[in-house]
Length: 99
Figure: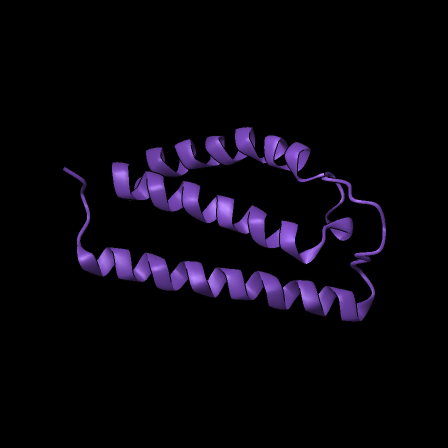
């Protein structure tokens, strides 16, 4: 039914873990450098005010959208477009409920 095999799922899982760790590392580097101020009030439009939990949640949403559409449609321009649309629609809702 789905156009994937076990190697593709393993690769996507490894990529997801690496991306989540990369977001956490970059957030930490941004805090240490003074670019990110987690004590400032949360604003979804200002990445510098995002706490670590929201940054990881946003990346997890992006990973789920891209992985889900790639597993369902296969890796193509269509799946990338659909997943980008999903992230663009769901992201503001996530920010609204995060506050």
